Image (cartoon, rainbow, N blue to C red):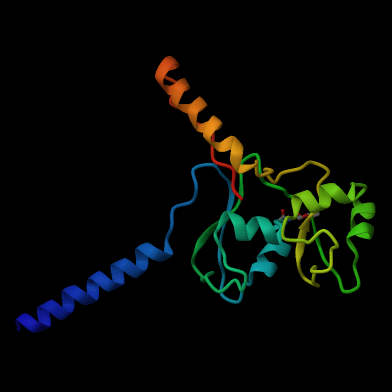
Length: 172
Ligand SMILES: *[C@@H]1O[C@H](CO)[C@@H](O)[C@H](O)[C@H]1NC(C)=O
């Protein structure tokens, strides 16, 4: 009898733990969200929702194989201020220079908004979704040497002005 009860408690605990893991809260600064449907892939969501492959993966910590995306998950499509909604689905034979020209943007802007694309643009693939906006949405990572200075600045702001709003960390 006790053993059955223990099994029940353990079972419920495992179930609750699984539930908690798969229902992550959206970031408070989430611009738009989406509930994953059965059959969705990262790139199918990206194409349908106008969100770049890079942005979807970065905002939701999705792995390269998109293997940690589950139907029923509520995911964030973009963070406010970093949400690129002008996108293009790569077709077979596309080249970055041509894509950039078609959207009237510099190649450097295309590369800045899609850090997963290498500088020679040899790793794009059919079905990948690129941010093709003329505005740069991806926060440029600063060099490590500036970090101690930034931290010191935040601490002194907190000490001397009582400001409680710290700048968000740049996502790599
Ligand atoms: C995606 O962008 C296209 C082209 O601008 C637009 O027609 C479509 O409504 C957008 N879809 C969503 C879900 O925002």
